[in-house]
Amino acid sequence: MINGVNRNSIIGGPGTGKTTLANNLGKELNLPVYHIDGIHHLENWQIRDKNERDEIILNKVKETKWIIDRTYKNTLDERIKNSDMVIF
Image (tube, rainbow, N blue to C red):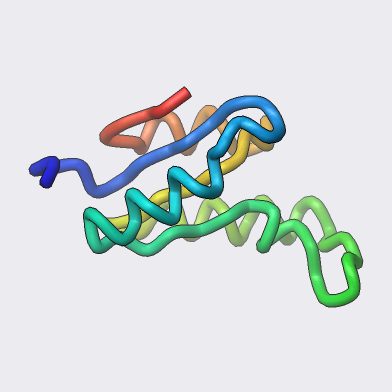
């Protein structure tokens, strides 16, 4: 167990295993996992409004425990600033 690591950003290119790592790390550390793709897309692959998406992500960042995967640039600086650990 990694002590004191409650906020984690996993970033990187497409197909690099971010989602798998986030899910496995979430189970290991008992942390909620938020996939930005799941926030970005609505049902039937409809795209959520970018401002609404970014607001949801930034609200997740305010929580005390999380793992967030993906690199979406609009919220990246805030996620990194609030992360205990960043995995690239």
